[in-house]
Picture: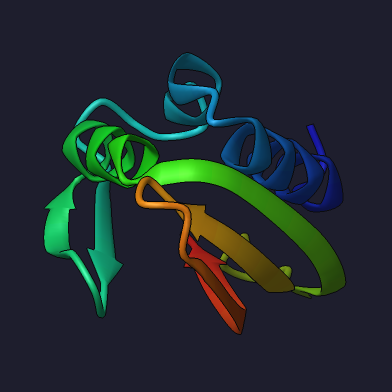
Length: 97
């Protein structure tokens, strides 16, 4: 799977709230570092995020690849409807190692 394919799958799983799908992209001990949730095991982070989410709409703005390390930076807009139906919209850069 190419880095761009991984990026598109990641955003699709994130937007759909597909916990199993998104966790397939991580190693068993994969970690997520978030300014909102802190650093947690991926399975814990995404379960908490999806529990706090009523709906997500993501718009890809760019994918940046570093061939030497296989790192990917995904730049996207996140329209996040929280569980209480409040809506927050912000730009995000997720870096996948």
